[in-house]
Amino acid sequence: METVGTVAGPDEPKEPARPRIITVIGRIWLVGGIFCLAIAVVDVIVWVALRPAMPTILGYAEQKAPGIRVLGPYFEHYAAIKSIEAVLAATVIVFAYQFLKMRAWARAALEVASWFYLVYVLGLFGFSYYLQLLGTVQGVSESGPRAAGRLVGSLGVGVLIAGALIWMIVVLRGKKVRAAVATEPR
Image 1 (cartoon, helix red, strand yellow):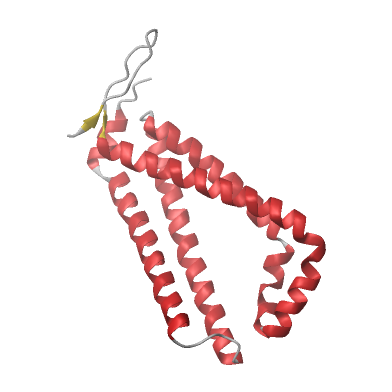
Image 2 (image 1 turned 45 degrees about the vertical axis):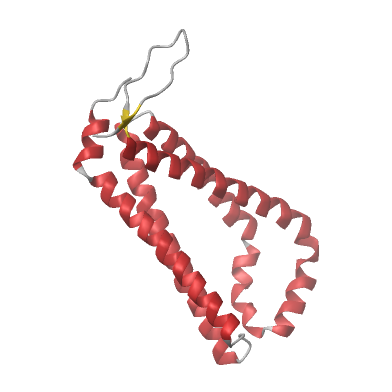
């Protein structure tokens, strides 16, 4: 089993080495959580700044693409949705940090988070596809090579993210990770 040693300060007891797979998964979730938290916070700040102008902006957008009306309820609750995303991202950061400390409960928490985000990503791509179909039916969606390229790119990113989440679920449920976190160091 490959392990990664940890650095301890002069007055701290040295922590036992952890399997590399725990380091990889923990750091992926840590970086992803920080990234998602930053995006959610920036989105809320921008939304608060733009909120007074949103009726005008959405009015112009609706004139150009009448199908945007479907997004009305989403925009009505945008700040709340992004605030929930920020809380979830902060929670995942805590889970990832504790997983890197090899806490057994954090393994289970990251597995649940993986399932949650997998459903979220699939739902988001399903909704995006629905909006694309709605726009095509109403004749407001872009067509041609650029639209096809965006669709292929989005699908590729979706498959990559979903594949990574499925891989994490499989690894987190695996014997190697379960055994490594079964004996918590502290």
